[in-house]
Image (tube, protein in one colour):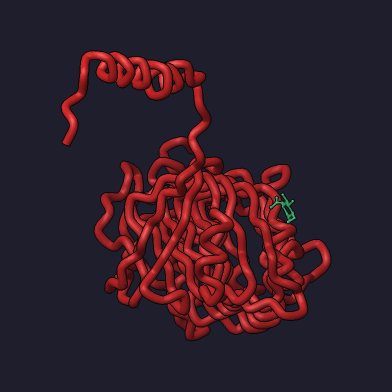
Length: 326
Ligand SMILES: *[C@@H]1O[C@H](CO)[C@@H](O)[C@H](O)[C@H]1NC(C)=O
């Protein structure tokens, strides 16, 4: 091996400076890095009493490059836990072309997409105001859509999912139009069995065109601001199969139970948390018992407010206050 002479040592130094250091140092400093997608892999787990491929700690702001993988692309049930996603990445849909169930609860979503073949979507507790439906009305496969506690205002895309059986819109406070919910909005959903509209801030419930919702068994209108004069029980008359009517925690002082039991074949009605006088409530309860309709009480042990008594498990206005003011 040849020892470096002084001369070729200088040559080497010159070479390093000219050909290695200078080009590196003279690189523009803000070089755009070629995007390397962050790849997330899901794990098969027991989740929500079911088997899902679960992704954890996924972050997607709508722009960062992202990729998804699983042991098998045939995975049909996918869930996100502790994740923060602005919307559903298209990369997810390409990675799981067979996805049937998607669970993305509490993940900061602004919108969701409903791909072909999807049957159930659980996306509670996000900020969803947009639902992009990729399914064709003629071949739609969606059965269950759970979108409680979101920011939905316009549900015309949702009602294209003509085969839906379960729709949960609880806690979407932007849903009422002029404080009213119109049952006709759901008329295209001929297979709908459960409709949940609890805590949406409605003052009125309407059914302007007597829409029948022919398969509807359960209607949840609890935790709203319905008062007696704004609730005409005739709106329920076209709902031929209605069995469970949930009216708890509104501000009803009366309820036309006679008309209700004539028109509908109810099995149960939830009434706690309204403002019936005890006299009126006992007549109501008597009529329900005679008609074979149950009145389940979920919170039997709540303290009644001052001036209210407990009767048949429900707090009712004692009437003492009314008498005093006479
Ligand atoms: C309805 O769907 C269309 C087309 O997919 C989309 O552009 C629009 O933003 C959606 N609107 C809502 C309110 O979901």
